[in-house]
Image (cartoon, rainbow, N blue to C red; front, side, top):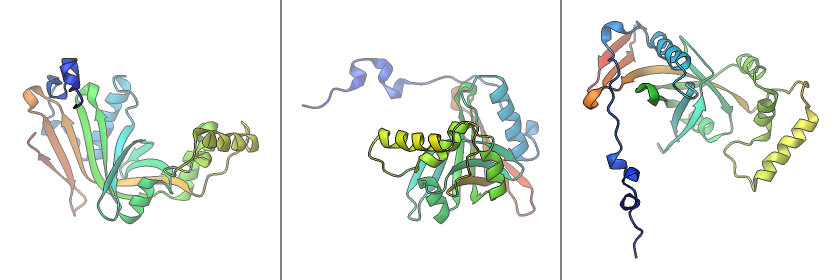
Length: 226
């Protein structure tokens, strides 16, 4: 006996029938900033200030190992500037290990309530320890302890093991006590090679404008077919 198709029970569960008709204002070349980081700043400001997107700094980070096998996860953007996009992680985590052997990475900002996406490809390098320490000091005390307690991506026996590790650290570094920066924890800066701005449009005729870095330190903009 085969499992019953869930869409037979409720048509709302049929992925093929799920669709939205986007009616957002379009994206035109003449309205773009000269460089992608400035354009990203414009869209990020709208996503944050319009209060439409939950955690607008959440981005999907995709990496690949030495054999080209990909993996993805959601990570929080913590800084951006003309040099690129910065996030922090455990350097023993899967993504950090993969970036160590293959520095090519992609980022995706899925701002669905605004019918927008930003897609980035580029290369990753570690941030300096001074920059890492400066950011670490801004984290809540509990998050600082969590960076020590979690052996990110490693197999653990139970939730209790994780909580026990955290409790031991809390006893050692109570609230108000300075927590040292873990040597195995730090940032990655993604230097963009391409940045695509995707705006949903009616009838799936979306706007896709992609910046590509040029050897002359300028950017070429291409319109991509949806």
